[in-house]
Image (cartoon, rainbow, N blue to C red; front, top):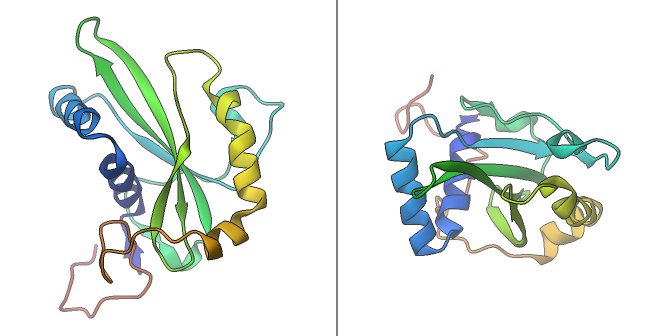
Amino acid sequence: MDVILFAELTAAVERELPSATRQAYSRDITEHRQLMPWAKLVTATDPSKRGGYGFLGPWVKRGYTDTKTLTLPAVALVALEHTRPQTRLTYRTYHVAVIHSTGLISIVENITTDSLTPGWAHRIMPAIANLLQDLDNYNTTHRPSNNGPWGANRIRLTPLPPTAGWYP
């Protein structure tokens, strides 16, 4: 089954933002089309590398992702770009999401940072490394909110009937 995993991850992060931040981000994306979020599946960390290069794993493409090939549970690093209206300064906020073996996506609230201060990657790398080591336990003990079978934070792990959806 092909799904837009990138869109699901970024939307899950956006829904978890505080209301004022979510509105400002939505305005930023509308007014500044050059702002581009990105997402990367993190399979390991390498503290000897600088910046985001220390997070090892494949990029999540903006197009379709075959969820049959995903190893679940999985950890994703999602970056959203923002601007400061007064100075037009562009910066990123970094968020960590877990894709559970059931397809639910939960945002790990205590692992987040921004690029306003140098060293963003090394601030969150130890927490992500610990999450990766304990991912199976997190997957079974942490229960993200499930808003029904097609809840807001869920990717589809089973194919829809051909008449129920569209395919590329």
